[in-house]
Image 1 (tube, rainbow, N blue to C red):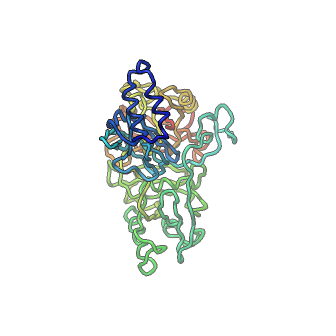
Image 2 (image 1 turned 45 degrees about the horizontal axis):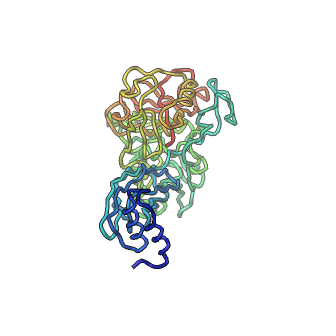
Image 3 (image 1 turned 90 degrees about the horizontal axis):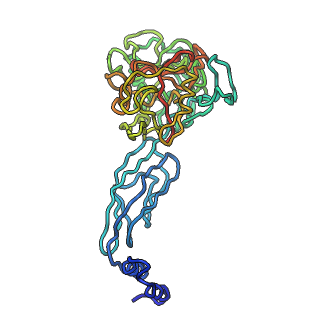
Length: 458
């Protein structure tokens, strides 16, 4: 029995001429059912618009459907921070380190049945770290401290893309000093092996470490403090290249590191070991040079001079469990893990197959090209050095060492420009490049010509 409170509404519906809407009988029954709590037909036509959750940004998506829905359910469970409510609205804030290309089934039901919809939701991970550059330099190396000149448009120092590093330390634990990365949860020995103290000025750098000795130096920290471990922590080890890379501060040189958190880092010659072999030659290993932030895979493991070790403990959260690169079919590639959208093909090559030779540009022309690129719905820029490294694959023997040669085919035998100026050696008239064919990162003169691939934020 319909509640008398609704009688005027029902009377209006009953008196409504059928000729005004040939769906009238169905609409009448549906609305009466809705008012009375009685369902007449199962729901149908459930749908959602394309779903994307940007990292750290609240999103909300409302379904469309036909009929009455009493309940919404979704399977499998949504990630932490995202939920579906009784109206079928999927909302929340995604803030995990890496992305997710999730497949879900939404079920909308009433007392007479249900309808299901398979949906894909793209969740974007956190962007790369900022390089920390805040000033700009033209091709000759002249400083633009406010990044307001036309030559500074699109430079790393002007855009400052990425998330800020967040280190805590040195922190005294017993007699040991540690530095914690609040972003990744990793814990570092504040000092290079061989030194100690609040300013890492006690002792002498262990600078003659072979790769094996560096490895054993780190693991031996587990035996410190009568076996409780350095700073009462266990599982000390050499870092991966991705982990050690988070310590590079491209706004400083000699050393290019967060000095307040990692004091007295060697400022002369010195390669810092990582735990990863060169995939093409296991007699070599990956290294980072903290004089300016250079990196590469070809330091001979048996080398006995100018080699340092900085040890770390904790579960790595800075290497994605899987690549989440999506070819959008429009000349762009989305990287869900790092909240980036890439130009699929190198400048000058075929926009679909990436065939033919690229057009090499000077650094200034590369900045200008990306600033004015019209491709898809995005606002393009030349990537900074930390962004560019996100498509470098350090774990394959197949060259070019690009993260996925299927979505990025036909890569040229050339370095690629970044928007980051070198603040070390040779200096501000040079910019950082990445060379996928040798898996190396280093600076070159801005007047030279190199390949270009642009990037955008989603």
